[in-house]
Length: 114
Image 1 (tube, rainbow, N blue to C red):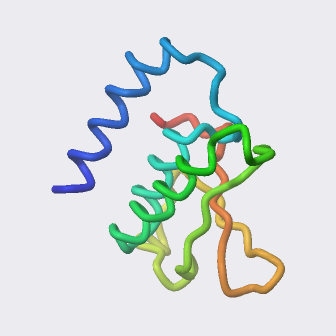
Image 2 (tube, rainbow, N blue to C red):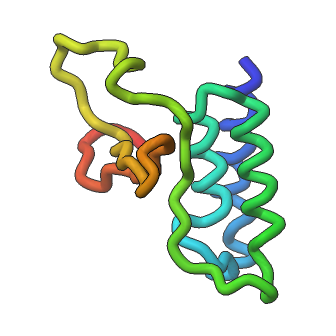
């Protein structure tokens, strides 16, 4: 319920308010897209909100910016909902160097809705 409301606010923000400051985000993916991915992929809501807020606070001239994919602390192989069904892939979970966390990368070749 709460995730749906927050996702709705993000969609409204992305549709209307990003036009005012187009191209002002210092990171890829943008801060609003980062927050959206965190809400969709991170199982802990408070951690997703915290990481999104930290990202927004870093989006200023004192930080370099660059590519910063969201991270999740879940194992996608253990949490798969449909192991025997054919489904579209919305996100790729790529393990980081330590192997205990995953980077979330959006599948741009997906034919589904984003």
